[in-house]
Length: 260
Ligand SMILES: Nc1nc2c(ncn2[C@@H]2O[C@H](COP(=O)(O)OP(=O)(O)OP(=O)(O)O)[C@@H](O)[C@H]2O)c(=O)[nH]1
Ligand SMILES: [Mg+2]
Image (cartoon, rainbow, N blue to C red):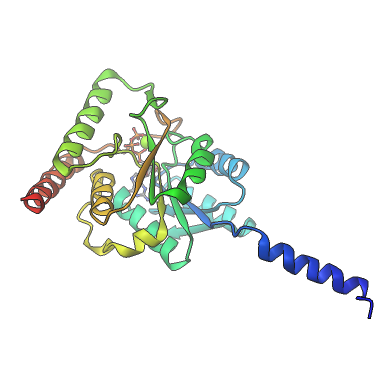
């Protein structure tokens, strides 16, 4: 019997679907606190550059209306998700909230970035292309091709020192262990005890790489040029810097006793 035309289309579609490679699901997340000067252009830029990715905004009740803007975007675009928290609870804990969402929603990869254009979306394609061959991709300022733009010498020095000291203390091999622009394999995030992360602030990045490396995760770096924030105000906080230094020293002691 001759197959009717409708049947051959159907079977053609089934065969095409079964041989097409399954595309990994990416979630691009950003913590926000008063980022109305940046978020609208940033979301547009990410959607242009990585239209296949879903987006997550974790907002801590920003007084400037960032959370309300994120809600409008989510209502108009099913790729956009928003989590609201009651108040400013810190960058590290906001990233943990995003990671838990990525695990619960079964994404394959979670890309974390700042919402102030310091982490430019132009680097997303390179990071996403590298992701399937490793467990963490770091957008790195300290490998060839990477760098920092518009930072005063003092900030370059402090950042460089924190990075070197953390690498030595925690026995880490990556050259940029303090940057937050990263793509994580979600299955690996699910393996570590996220409740057991000590850091709530700046030391969060170093602690994540330390804990993932201890589990044998493969870490790769792709170059990024980190630019100073485009708009809005810095949330740099000295109290948090001192607390983070304490966490790094405590993790360093743990790494030392692990080795002996
Ligand atoms: N949800 C949430 N987001 C935060 C918090 N603190 C900072 N952020 C966001 O985290 C990202 C990084 O914070 P930044 O203030 O840019 O910190 P930084 O990059 O070290 O410093 P500057 O760029 O100089 O301001 C930005 O998207 C902020 O809006 C917080 O307590 N809660
Ligand atoms: Mg910033």
